[in-house]
Image 1: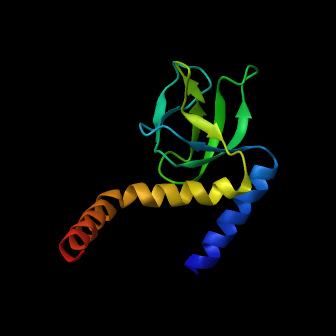
Image 2 (image 1 turned 90 degrees about the vertical axis):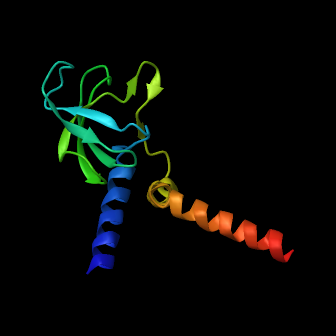
Length: 130
């Protein structure tokens, strides 16, 4: 059941990508979401890094996006600013291959401390046996 759910979710993300409406949170600090389009509207949460979002609306200038969370951690939906002080916070997915890479990067970061320890242990073994 888990695998078929993941396949369905990936298929939905590809459909949304084809419509040029698929975004992800690039900033390691995440992205603040608000209940309304206005910058002063109430906060409704924060999308974490690597959250995948569907654009369901935008203001006239494109400086604010209304998004719905498809994958990752954060509120179900909210209004976000794609860039803050010239820094990209939320980025449009540029290629279909990038969908898988976002997931892989999220997993790699989640287990970075473990893989770093394992790599150090392997390096140590190489030094003592080499």
